[in-house]
Amino acid sequence: MKSIVIIFPYFGALPVQYKMWRASALLNPTVDFMFFTDACVEPAKNIIVHQMQFSDFQQLAQRAFDFPIVLDRPYKLCEYKQAYGYILQDYIRDYDFWGFGDLDLVYGDIRSFLTDSVLEHPFLLGWGHLTLLHNDQETNTYFMKQVDGYQDYKDAFTTPRITFFDEFNHKGCSDKWRDCRPADCWLEEPFDNVSKPKQSYHFCSLNREWKQVIFEHIGNKLYMLRFNKGQMEKRESLYAHFQHRGFMKDKVSDYSRFLVTPRAIIDYPKRLVNLRLRYYCRKPNTTSGVTTSSGACTLTTKDRNTMKQRLDYIDIAKGIAIILVVISHTAYPALMSYTLAFFVPVFFFCSGYTSSSLKEISLTSNFWHHAVKLLKPYFFFSVVLLIAFQDFSLRAVFGIFYSRYCLYPFGTQPDIVHFMTVGNYPLWFLTCMVVAYLLYYLIVYHPKYQYYIATFYLLLTVVMQNLPILLPWSIDTAFMMALFMFAGKLTRQYLPTLFERRPHLLVILSIVAYIALIPLCFDINLSVRQYGFSVLVCMIAALTGSVVLIYLSRLLEKTIVGKGLQQIGRHSLTLFCIQIPFILLGKTLAEWMLGGPADSQPTLVTTALIQASTAIICGYLISVLLQWNGRIKKWIF
Image (tube, rainbow, N blue to C red; front, side):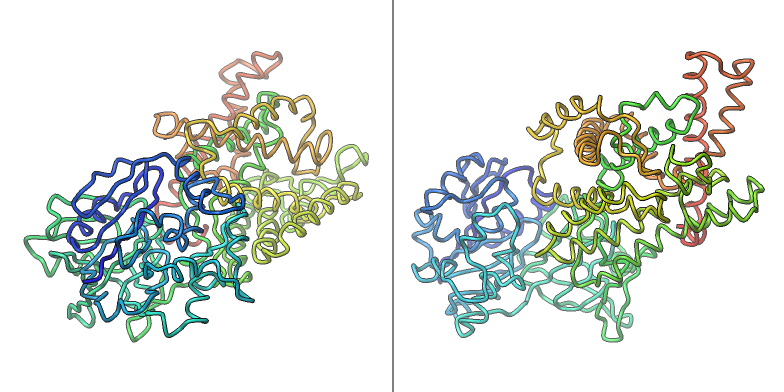
């Protein structure tokens, strides 16, 4: 029997699926699993652990090459997977095959699929979640071979950018094996790569095209289960890979037999087995996948389109930001004067930070999804406010479609021509975001030219600040907002550990920079194209302020205050739309409580706090009520 070792350089917290992974690994005693890690991984007969820090592995990898490599964060390790046999050759000399893989999966009977006849091939599978290679000098150095039209390993190893050098479909090493040495490859797919979730989205095997499935693990066998025309069907699997499912719960008490469902890993049921299996395989009402007659699952744009990953600290940041937005419209906006530069841009930064563009969905489809999601509440609440304020003048109606507070910038004309006169002026934010999404996707769908496009956007922002009028839908401001979204995307891509609780150097520098820039952040009002000292200073202050706010939000995560702000953040869209009527109501309430209009700084501050509290509480309650009924929620949002 040919010996196999699968290598796992892994640094940081172990995934929620680790216990399941370990149980299935131990049930494959003829395969070794070798860790290089700082995590708490307990050694076993076939689990070999080399405890080390990430910096130690960095030095280990650097010693293998005669040029400076970039390995600045653990996520960058994925680029080096096909080089592990070369980097770690001293550790794997006694094995016939070595491989690499992921921990967010469960194995079946590995040897029943990877038989000795299959292992006659030097290259097997080829995916990031599991690949095997023959342990010889030629195979271990094949990643270095330069072939026209394919990535050069030196380019992949010397850039901080993720190039997917280890994966298929990116002209990386697996593509090179498949295209240049097909006879040496075993590329069958007896595994299941499970669909990415939309929160509790049902399992769908993307490569084997089974929908509404669950997985049963019994002994060392793994089966994919589904119900087809009322009958249960099983298919054995080499492994199942559960990507982007950090929310799964591990509730197993006996790993001799268990189920993997979309929400949790659970014990195999002892009673009402068939009924419970049907229940776990059901398609939740929250999904929108389209199924074919063959049982395949084709994900719609709404399901596969840049699904926003719900991060608690991002919701907290939005909660803080919407409170600042509300205060800016009260009787004493000076309360948030030190946050002028970032309390609006942070929403755009967060949008880029939590989105991941999927190229299989067209730019048009991605943009349309976001446009509809923003414009439905925009027009709904505009009409509601028009009726509430009983202003049906041509200017008020035209203002809804022009979507700008006024026609002329402040201070340029005696009459700046107010448009949004029915308490709907905060809604400029929604149409601005629609335009910003279009501009943002123009960047991310053209990665080869993304920095040129971003530079062009910056120059346009500088030029358009001198236009005599404010353009409809904030077109003149949206270019800057798209840059904030792009900055958020780059931060998530290249600095995934930036918002860890231990302060990152860039967080500290952002705090210092923002404090230094505060004196220059006067008179900023992005809704009417006011950038304060300069466009560049405004952008730097907005970005550093956003970083500081999100880091502080991370510190508040899991606290009582944080949970409250998180709830407010999740309803920030509605609060944006309907804050003004309740701010006015709060003013009336404050005058009643104070015995008259505010005429001093203490009474102005008190009035502002009452207004903000009224708007936040009432807006939140209305948002909850509107989203309580699924049909109303779908109609408005």
